[in-house]
Each structure stands twice: as structure tokens, then as C-alpha cells.
Amino acid sequence: MEHPPIIQIEHLTKSFPMGKASFTALTGISLNFGKGEFAGFIGPSGSGKTTLLNIIGSLDVPTSGEVLVLGNSIGGLTARQAARLRKENLGFIFQSYNLLAVHTVFENVEFPLLLLNYAASERRRMVMDALEWVGLTDKIKSKPPQLSGGECQRVAIARAMVKKPSLVLADEPTANLDAANSHNILQTMVKLNRELNTTFLFATHDDKVIGYLRRKVYLLDGKIDKDEVFPN
Amino acid sequence: MRTAIKLAYRNLIGAGLRTWLNVIVLSFSFVVIIWMKGILVGWDHQAKNDMIRWEIGGGQYWHKAYDPFDQFTLAEAHAALPAAFQTEIENGNLVPVLIAQGTIYPEGRMQSILIKGIDPGQNLLALPTQKLDTTPDAIPAIIGENMARTNKLKIGDRTTLRWRDAHGTFDASEICITAIFSTNVPTVDVAQVWIPLENMRSMLLMPGEATLLTIRNPETIRSGPGDWKLMTVNDLVADLEAMIKTKSVGQSIFYTILLLLALLAVFDTQVLSIFRRQKEIGTYVALGYTQREVVWLFTIEGAMHAVLAAVLAAAYGLPFLIWQARTGWKLPIETGDYGFAIAQTLYPVYSAGLVISTTLIVMLATAVVSYWPSRRIAKMNPTEALRGKLQ
Ligand SMILES: Nc1ncnc2c1ncn2[C@@H]1O[C@H](COP(=O)(O)OP(=O)(O)O)[C@@H](O)[C@H]1O
Ligand SMILES: [Mg+2]
Image (cartoon, rainbow over all chains, first blue to last red; front, top):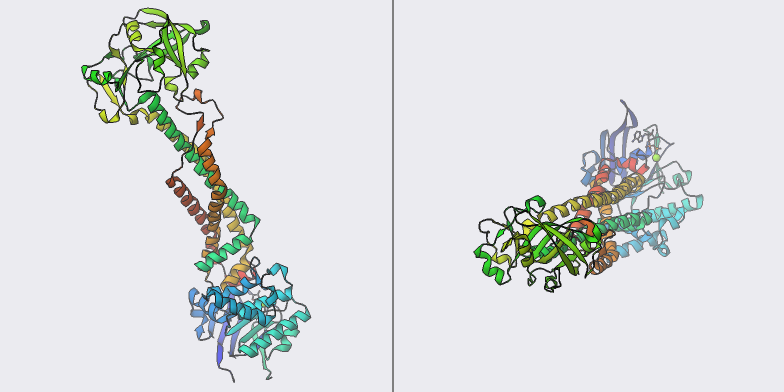
């Protein structure tokens, strides 16, 4: 692998308690991802994509196996350490955008910087940069309900990118978007991946997204089915 | 912390109408609690002041048999004044009052009353006793407005007064009303007439005697000699205080309910928030908050209702409270029949302690009802919160 690994997954298993029994969503996953990858988990609904992304994002913990993200063992982090990992190094993009509806575009993008205690002037500069990347500098005073779906997702990308995290996790980011908007935000993410060397990890079953991926990890019933790398 | 406050403020203002409804109800509690408590304090001040001015002065000496709640003891409750009192009486620093039972016959009706003899020259009490110095061909008498109203007596009216003298013999004479005074102290007004002390002593065949003496200066108070029992101002207002305390209990039940309603509204908002804003909670966690910090955030958000309420309460409550303190609150009932010293118009008195303690209590209570439901957030599974799947 030409990239230094930032994610190392060894024999990951995840099961959820289901009454007395339990349901195994992920079985025996072993994978590495390097810095700057533009990769995705692909599979039908219920194949375990979101579960895997959540564990990598330290929102959930492995049942067994080892998951190292930027050197942090996800299973062994305290709530505070996990929150710190997310705050400093991870960006999330969701299917339904998850913007704060009563806050302006500016405030939404500013939020991660508030958590990192940046000074006001610094925050302003960084937010404007991030909105520049996604082409929304003219909407800083708008609130999410006034924006289109495509615009909302661009705000979400700006929010995920504003602190220049090492890793961005995007769970079905195009599921609520039309084709034109899907291509638009994917091109934006490809550009950011190139310019900032940010690692992008997707969970998707959308062909439009799959077309942009340089590495495709196919999941089926919680197992890795195929792992294809496309050099370009 | 600053971030949380900023965020909480944005969320709260962003929630719009719902926030303002809660804030209005809470601010209402602020104002009502301060006003109601202020009224009681004002009443307490007024009532004590009026009692001191009209009846009890700086304290009293009571004849040991005197019991204002048992009129049958009055026949025994009198004695000649000890020599130790004489100079103070002459200086006007002790005002003797002789009390006996009597009957008047206004418009032919029989009315049981108290006869009180007092020195017309006294200037310790607010009673217009100088009007007892005019001597028509009847015994001059002054009465309060309540007494005048219930017996349809006017200045210049005459009526027969009947009493029993020291030997138990009935006697009667005519009295003439020379003044009607207005007071908030029913115990110098209701069912009684005031006549000159010397007239009364000779009517009753009790020369030099009295039932009680009112003291001008609390500093000169010493324990009473012999048959005379010292009653301090505190002793004499004890009943009033007990009564105000009862009122204040009733009042606090009222505003506790009001406050509980306001708190219920905040509590309800919090509970709803936690269910409706699961995705938002999950997002906060994804963006780098711990769940504990989100509990904090929601608690601050809820508690901030009380801060906004305090601001709003200050905006409309302050002018209202000041206006009330100036013009007073006119009681909707006839206070003369109340049996206690209560003015028709009460002027609320607010202290800094009252305002500060009310503010603290409301804020603390709001913080508690905001925190209580928010604790749930700490137990949420963030991935399920993100999917909005809880419950
Ligand atoms: N918290 C959970 N409790 C129980 N089962 C779960 C939970 N989360 C996910 N699952 C199950 O795990 C499987 C994988 O889910 P998910 O990772 O969301 O799949 P995908 O994102 O690929 O659609 C599904 O069958 C889902 O029902
Ligand atoms: Mg999914």
C-alpha cells in the first residue's frame, strides 16, 4: 500500500443484542486504509455499511477484534477520548444532512471550530474558506430550511471539512439528492480529497458515488465480498 | 461552557414561540411571587405601624386579670395605679385606659359595647381625644368609622349609655358623639366608645383606676410592679403575626402551584426536545461532544428559560411593581370587618433579599427540571440517536 495506514481493522466482529439472542452485523472484517484514500463500502441495505462506518467513527465499539483509527484503539477509548478523536480528526456527512435547523449556514459550519476553541477571527476565515470550497459564500446568513437538498449537503460538507480533518466519513451522502446535485457534491469531495489529502470513506449503494471511488469494498451480510482498488 | 451558552441561546431563540410561552409563564411567576410577598410584607409593616400609632404605642402594662378575649374578666381587671407610674403619667409618657362593658341604644336597638376611658389630653395615640374636651350637656364620646357605620351614628348624635358601677349597680347617661375617626385598627374601633377617663372613673366609682396603660417609649420599659403585667410590642403583635403567617402559608401554596405550572411547561419542553431532537443529539456527539456535555447543553438550554424570564419580568414587572408600591393595591373586600389591622389599600414592600431569593429559587428550580429529563441523553446510544430510532 502506497499510503501510510490511518485505519487498521483486524478480525472485527460486531453483534447487537436481540432479546436473548444476538444479531451479528459484521463478521471477521480485516482492512487497512491509508492517508488520502477515496474509498467506499458498497452493499445492499442491511449489509453492515453504516455499522462499520460508525465503529470507525468511534460512535460505536467492536464486539471483538481491533479497530485502530489514527492510532486510537476504538474499543478501548473512554467517552471523552472518543469525543476528542471525533472533534479533532473526524468529519461526518449524513444522508439527511443533520444540520442545526435554527442556526445559520455560517453558524453550522462554525460549530466544529467552536468546539476546538478557535478565536472568532480565525473561525470566520476558516468558515469562509470552507464555504468557498463548496461554493456557498453567498448563503452564509440563510438557515437550512431555506436551502435546497443539494445546498444543505454542501453545507454539511463544509462543516465536515472546515477543521481539515484527517478522515471524513460519509454515510449515503447522495441518497436524498438528484443526479446533478450528487455529481456536484462528489466532484467537490474529489477536489477536497486531492487538494487537502483528506481521506474519504463512504457507505453507499448509489452507482453515481461508486463511479467516483478509487477503492471499492463490497460488503455482503456483514462480510467483505470484494476489495477492489482502481489506481487513477 | 461559553460555547454551550452560545449554542443554548441560539437553540432557545430559534425555537421561537414555544420558548416565549415558557418564558412568559415563568416571568409571570417571578412577578407574582415578588408582588404577593411584597403585599404581605407591606401589610405587616402597615398593620404594626397602625397598631403602634393607634393602640399599643411602645408597649403596654396590663392589669393582671385583663384578657382582651374574655370580656367577663373586665369587671375584675382594674386597679388603682401604683405610685411608681404617677410621674410618667403626668409627663404623658404613660396613658392609662379604663375598660368596662356597656350597652348603647342607637335608634332603640340594644348594642353591647366596650366603654374605654382615656385622658383627653393624651398625645401618645392617634385617637382624636382632644375632641373629648368639648363638654356638651352629655358625656362626650369619640368612635371609629366602623362603629359609626354599624350603628348609624353621626357627629352630634346622642344615645343612651348604660353600665354597671363597681358595686354592680346599673346606671345610665347620655353620650354625644363629638368625633368619628378613621383607622385601620379594628381593636380601637369595632363595638366601642371612647370617653374621658375622669368621667368614666366617676361613673364606675373607680377613682384613680385603670385597666391598662400604654407606654410611649420602649426604652423606658421595665417589668411592671405588682398587679401590672408588662406587654412588649412583640407580645402585642403576636396574634397579628400569627395571622400574617397563616396568610403567607396560603399564599405560598398559591404561588407554588403557579411556579409548578411554569416548571411543568419547561419540563415538558425538555422531554419533548429529547425525543424530537435525537438526530441533533447524535450530531452533537458525532461532531465531538461527549454525551455528558450534551446533557449539560440541554440543561443550560432549559435553565436559560429562567434567565430570559428574569429579563422579561424585569421589563414589565419592574414598572408594575413600582407602580403598585406607589399607588398600592386596593382590597376588593371591606377591610373594616376583617377583625385585624388591615388597610383598605395595601402598599407592597419589596426587599433586595426578596427579589434575589425569588430569582435564585426560580432559576434553581428551572435548572433542576431541565436537568432531570436531560439525564436520559447520557444513556442514549449515539448511533441510534443519529438514526432517530429511539422509542
Ligand atoms: N443497534 C442495532 N441493533 C440491532 N440491530 C442493528 C442495529 N444497528 C444495525 N443493526 C442491524 O445490522 C444490520 C446492518 O445494519 P446497517 O449497518 O445499518 O446496514 P446498512 O448501512 O448496510 O444498510 C442490519 O440488519 C440492521 O438491522
Ligand atoms: Mg446504512
